[in-house]
Image 1 (cartoon, rainbow, N blue to C red):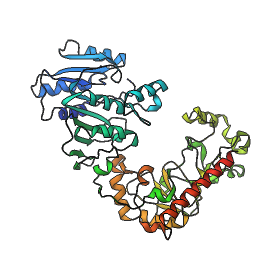
Image 2 (cartoon, one colour):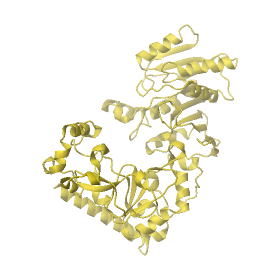
Image 3 (cartoon, rainbow, N blue to C red):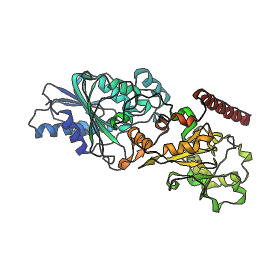
Length: 473
């Protein structure tokens, strides 16, 4: 099975305890592990039953990888009531179950063939956007759960907030989500996965969900059934509605900084650049260089070599000049050609095309991961933010200072704390989809009515698009 990661025994035991909490299994019950690997959860159930002097239920482990199937079958050979099937849980039929427990595989859409993507999109409501296979396992397991049955899964926490998982959140809202347990991010040795243990019962949603955060805080939450992110509710956000404008309403861009896919090649110390390369260099800043609050005015240490015109159009290879000479060095070119983006782009292109027309304007910057949200202003619009920085470009450059002051206010810090996902050690992970939804004061529109501001935003975006089109021609 692709995406298989062994589950540590202590996590297995933690999950099995939740599976049988308040409901001891009977011999006539049946239990499923839909991606059993070498049988860790089946052994965990046997351990629990032995400790509690309970006769084990009938157990079925499903595994698609032949070697692990043989290992599991050998491990449980001769133990009555345990069956290990060589089967694909997402495709092959199965009976309904009283209990389901497991660690579904994490497989990105980028690891699937086109035929697999189409097959899954046809069969699963959760196969939308850039889906991961664990979302499909969630859906199939819920459909395989008998009325009143209970399921415990460990998955990445992303299903709680990413837009791709909205169909799963809507599906889960018709079940009783008993508990969401955000366990230690280093629970899987060698992986930082931000794992979440979710306990679900196939009963109508009738009571709040108990949520345990990684700092030990426990909350009782009524989760939204619309498919929107659950993170604000989980972190105690206020739910009152507001007709205030949002940050996205006054900005032409709220985005992550430039991803070159090879910063070791494209990001260089300014002092080390030859005069020939200076013409291709733009000053650049990373999250760790955002330190003391205030304007970003002092000279930066690093520059980014940019093989694009100031209109954001990739230069033809014959126009790269001295930059082309540098990039064509054997070791440099080999490094660039190893990037995944070269499957669809020229070998010297960035991983993502930089929108320089929008980026090189007065803007506000913030770190992508931070303990406390802070914002800096680039009044000159000179700096290129790297991928560890988010940048906010107001349509009206005249409000940049006031907007930055507002973003550094305690109220905004509180809102972001409530709405942002968490990274390691409780740090906040700021993302564009959250920043865009930040409510802002009406006075940030200045004397311009909202309709005038919206028109300015559209006019500017249209102008940028026209400039890009002209540059391409």
